[in-house]
Length: 186
Image 1 (tube, rainbow, N blue to C red):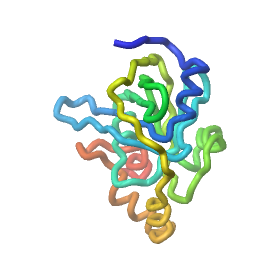
Image 2 (image 1 turned 180 degrees about the vertical axis):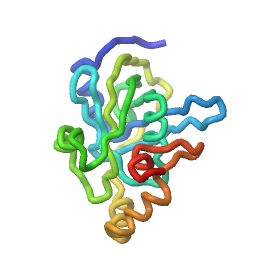
Image 3 (image 1 turned 45 degrees about the vertical axis):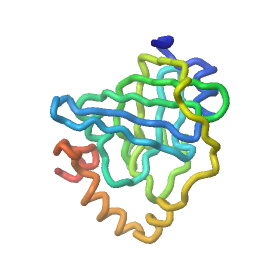
Image 4 (image 1 turned 180 degrees about the horizontal axis):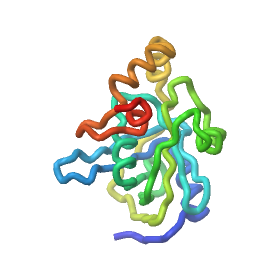
């Protein structure tokens, strides 16, 4: 079952900082709605305090996290060790989307390297931390980050990225608005 705590400890923070990938899970309230689970990389996740975390989110083919957290706030992050000692760490909490050009953006953006294709920052208040063994997680060696997203974004250019966001990032698969969608009047 694992161990449960109400906040992120220093050892949890150190474990998180060593991981090259993390996973984000959200879901709508509707029983028919689709659960979203996304892998994330880069140096995009930051522990800001014992109960607050944030990650810098790049433009991609969907924006489920923004839609789901706008509707109900629920979010789960999972980190697992693919190298060294086995461990799984889950962070449960409530999240919100922070957009460029807002006062909150000025607070959170300095924690990250912001790219031309950065679409938003997801900030979460964590109320439950779970650790478990991770014995079933295989060993992998990290060989680096992919450049494909940044090549794609450079080819699109600012106008192409804006158009892509308007086409793909304003509503969820289930028709829920994202924060970007609300801003755009969707």
